[in-house]
Length: 185
Image (cartoon, rainbow, N blue to C red; front, side, top):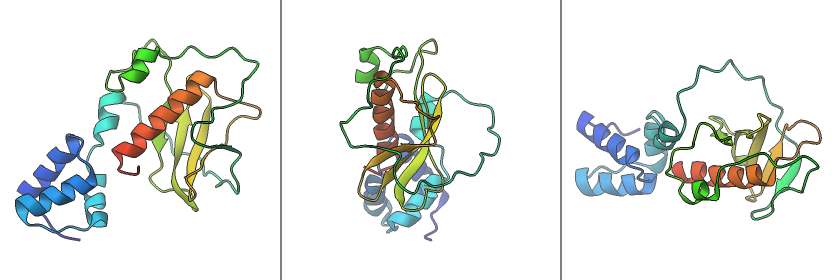
């Protein structure tokens, strides 16, 4: 892995905090410092930095206990192709954020309104390109993953559970924001 000077590391940290993609940071390193760094080396370097999107949107949390091991799904329990929301349930939809909150993703969520929390796994489930955890506004938790064909799937949900249409839409929005912030889409 290339070693950077303290000044170069601080520049990378500030560019990353400002929301620059890894590709943009690579180009700036070449242009401003004449440093050629592989994408993987740069990704490992920024993995050690605080993630700007998480720091802005989520309040600090108490440390979590070690998660129980999760069996990787052998096949998608509920594949959700892009644009295809969940089926209707007999439960009334949970109250979700106003449409203006979805249109303005930079606005801080109101603590009185329920939210959908999407997290990325540090180690992906084998056979996926991305995976993580989701907590819906009603507190139900599950695992999400994107397989190698780009299909979204949900697993490890309580039996018979389907998120409300508002939660499903908000989940897809939060997931895209998270993947974009990591340079994955």
